[in-house]
Amino acid sequence: MEDQGGFNWQDPRIANLFATAAQTPFYKLWGDTITEISLHLAKMAEAKTLIEIGAGRGNLTRDMLIKMSSKNISVPLFASDANEAVLNNVAKLRDEFSNQQLQTHLWDVNNAPDDDLKKQIKEPVVLYERASITYATYGCLENIGQVADMIVLGDYFNCTGELFADDTMFDKIGVKPLFYKDVEPLILKHFPNQYLFDREVHDRTGIPNISLVIAWK
Image 1 (cartoon, helix red, strand yellow):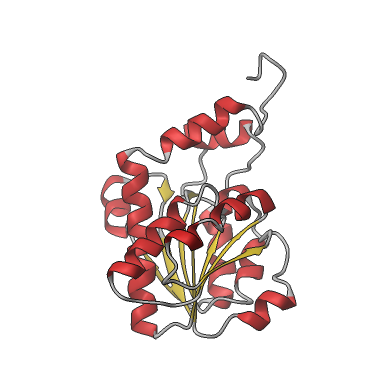
Image 2 (image 1 turned 45 degrees about the vertical axis):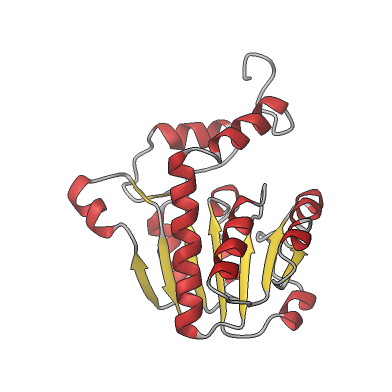
């Protein structure tokens, strides 16, 4: 793509690439882990609202709705994204899961949540995402802290300070690597309790990225 003029999110090859990736075993396991943990935390905390940021193709939203239905749980679920077309697509899931309280909300997490969202949600709030912050900025954590009580972040935060192949790839598409040393104080400012899901794996293998952060107030 660089040889042809640069990276372009609208290129159909990119859409096909992401659609294919979303069906791979790892991607499904990753999403299943995030939604299962989020729903378990919601039950423990008797959460009144679930928020998903970066709804994308709706795979994570669908997975959460399937789990909620199978466990006979009905909590208002706000699927948010910065792209209105994405939300229009996700909204179609309402017909398939009429027993659930699915709502969509236009929200670019690089900006503070608007008053409309704040008025609609009820505490406690569990917020989750998969690789959405990768395409945002550090400031989004400040915005998330305004509405969430518990968070499950599925991102590849660089924890070594060295750049690796995936960091180089992100850089080519205009995304700068997010270093965990910079992310952690922003998380702890709003969520002083933190658990790194893969800490044991990280300590044993020295993998360069943290893949799942759980934090709460």
